[in-house]
Image (spheres, rainbow, N blue to C red):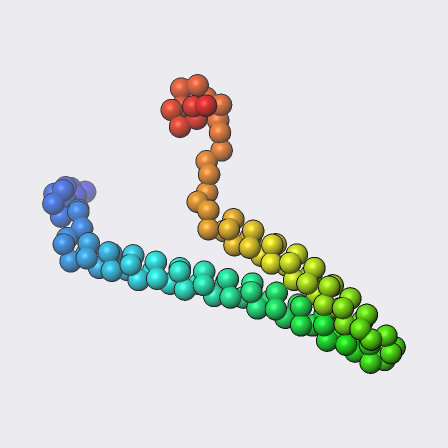
Length: 117
């Protein structure tokens, strides 16, 4: 069997060029994250607007068919507003949870310095 030579520590570490490439990738990836977060926020906002407008249009249609002006449109806007707020809160909480770093569960080990209370 051939003996495998040891690789010197200087060769195992990333070189200057590789460190620069990694730094550029890190900067580039952080920009993508912020863009995706902005798009998620715009998605939440547009869902809210669509819910309110849809409720109003349905109420307007009920008013036109049942001749109950202005109650149908008012109730439609109210229902759309409530639904929009519910969706807004649900999606905003989900977005907040997805951006938080994962937490390590407690072990209740008295020797663990990270688990101190």
